[in-house]
Length: 383
Ligand SMILES: Cc1ncc(COP(=O)(O)O)c(C=O)c1O
Image: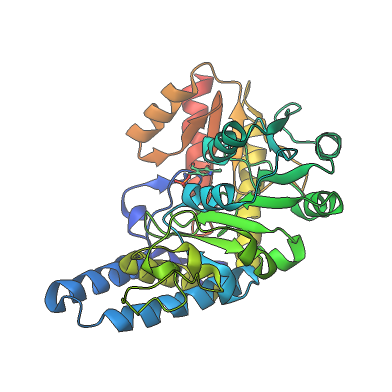
């Protein structure tokens, strides 16, 4: 569906716009009305009928699993529902079969959720951690080339960096890691929902994400993708009845982990949240994820031009087409926190990160809203 041609209809689905110019999707995405309704539908059902419709919720969750798989070009068997990105990353970190000589490649721009699980393993198994240092807030492929060797078990990297939106070339990184016999795990929480992701094309081995940012889904929804051939290699570290092949069989027995990614789900899943996530993905898909990426790019183009016209302000995110997206970091301010607070007084919502402003519009935002932010920034910084 054409976004510009349906913008009023689209925006009507977002209660957040009633009060806010919301340009903060790298922090927390708001929920569309249909998502709110879906979460409420399952909660109401539980309120009025307890667990009578449990199996219906299970079936609905399986539908959502298929929709998630379609979104990233995976197979439903490769998807596990998890509570958030951190849990997904930790499941892989805890479940890999570590050997004494293994090393782990991380980088110094990562969000802590994609550092701590690896640091814990490194400590537990006395492994070497190799850290790619950023160059002027960018990650260079040659630095990964230098760090990755035939002892690299895994390269852990965000698809898009949280602080400045730097997007890494996952396809090249996967090739590099695989040539050395290693794996790639990506944290996709800052990319999924704002751009197409094809796990087969990128050839990543694992992908973890939450739904609450760009995916416009409820808090505590997320999933973990595991390449089919690797499911067996990852030992389930948190286990429960859902881990088992026959998860509706409650009798005394020895565990027989499911052959598919459900083995990583352990206990009860978040049915209301998952119903909401399905609605959110359906909205994104109805407009087309390529159209969403294009629309965000247009808004960001407008923003970048506007920032360049403001004295003293500077876009610090990479402007190269292959690295940029809906997260724009702006520097040159004495006190970014103060600016964020002042903007909030005008109901304009952005964040400050790593010494700059972080602005992150989504596809339902408008050029008018970008202009509103630029006008406010002009007033706050140029007077
Ligand atoms: C890159 C990245 N990973 C992870 C998270 C949060 O982790 P979780 O999804 O486990 O809450 C954030 C939150 O800002 C993030 O930016």
